[in-house]
Image 1 (cartoon, rainbow, N blue to C red):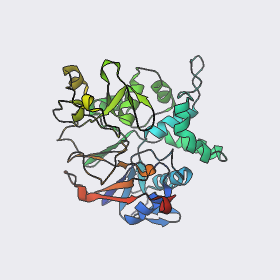
Image 2 (cartoon, rainbow, N blue to C red):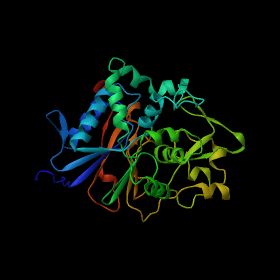
Image 3 (cartoon, rainbow, N blue to C red):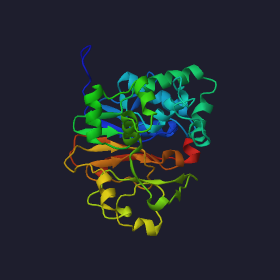
Image 4 (tube, rainbow, N blue to C red):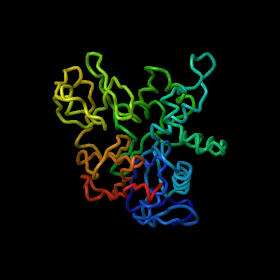
Length: 326
């Protein structure tokens, strides 16, 4: 390859939410033929793409982040922003003068708990953490690659096109970060939809308690559902809805609010959703790669080689076992 010439890759390996599972990440990369060359994992003719959420919760966040960032900066990987990178930016960024808040993401008990391991593992390395936060701002919210797409939680084509038309890029800046903390703002809608996905409010003021102990007034929904009729047809989260809710008919208004990723659209890869079990496709052109690695699930990748219809045979993963990867 001549100097200044962009590398040509024969395929791409899209990798799910790492959440500080550095040893599992190394095992997965090596399983796919990546080798540490001068300390950076590289493949002879493929590129890795991370779907975000490299930080928080896991045992080796600093190490995982260093592996991924080194790969991105060396050109052997790309990464889109996850909601945990976005949340860290908000948590560590002071609000502007005149705001009723101290930080863009308030330091509530819930938010403290989410970022606790990241702050603890960087406690003796504050400058390193700040350098990573600055780097997070350079991460795109979405990738449109030849023949496929990558976003952390949800591909909303109309919203993405509106963002590109307004800003002419896939990244955010500090002004956009501040704007995104304003309820009802365009910036807030972009970050919520692309990085957290779609949801519906529970009816009649009902709430559900998740497995993490939090009380929720909404439930996550599929952005690819075809002709859904009931809540069970659209719910997409680790916590199931109670039977009487699951069988509830969607109203016409609720159906209008749902997003449906077209069958004719390019394959899209997401993370975010804490799946479990053996990796499988959501649709022939939709794949989720988050299989709860940090909860001793699996760290999963999809090896994309240009196919228009995805195949479950292209998943590769390592099971995250405590004795092997802690």
